[in-house]
Length: 407
Image (cartoon, rainbow, N blue to C red; front, top):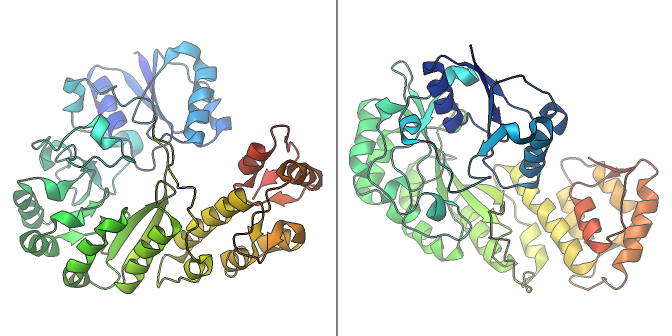
């Protein structure tokens, strides 16, 4: 019996394309093995097989490293696909039409798939305009990917509410009593009264299907007025039942971020802050005057929930501030570690020459010297704050902290 190994490089959820490929090869009588290496060491494990297919979903440094490791392990015998590898490479139509093989992942929590594909918007941070094009007619039905005994459904549609026939799809969700996770978020601009009434009848759920949750996105401050206009609808979804995804680190200024985040706080919505992961040909476009307001106003924001996710944004802000001004802003560091990982603040406190309380003063006069001093302290075995090694590499090309490790 021939054998194929399907390598899932970086999927967070079960990979739909790999499950369809699994179904295809099982129909052909092949033995199918799924490999989900979650470290470079695991990617070195060699599986004997007649064919190797790998899916790379994200265009991140870690995903690139995993791809290179698989290439080293299997040479030219491994074939790659996925949005993180190529936006042009697609499943053959006869494979894409197959019912997913959920047994490949031993997955039973929910079904996942698309009802529609594409989006009419052309957000520059998104791969959908290039990969999927404009919003198309229905690409499949629930019966194409939902097992008969499954009630939980995760939808991967790019812009479901913009689909002209979405009311019939929402009605079907209600009638079939599905619990639905709108994983790619819904577009607030297309939320009408009629669609809202149907959505309220659906059992909308979080990604773990353990509590009510519906998802929207707010990636541009110009969309704030759409949230303000629909604040009553948003409130009627239920307290702590609306999560809003906000991308940061792409092309907004600090004041624009602040305007978006403060809106979520004022409307009592749950924020989910997502750092921009670059896509091919679209690097981050942060303005030179990113720090265009009092930083203290931003870092003093608090939210009723999802505080850990807020800390991720503050951590990014901390590293970006250092990169722009050559020192860490002490009040930001203190807020960042006031609740969680308090031990990390000790690293900063032991290095007062790396801290400042003077807002926006530029200390980038001798960054290579600081990088070399950093090298001296890291060889003592001290942990290095997360994310700083790449920054120091950019300050000093000779900086090679071989004895350092990040915590």
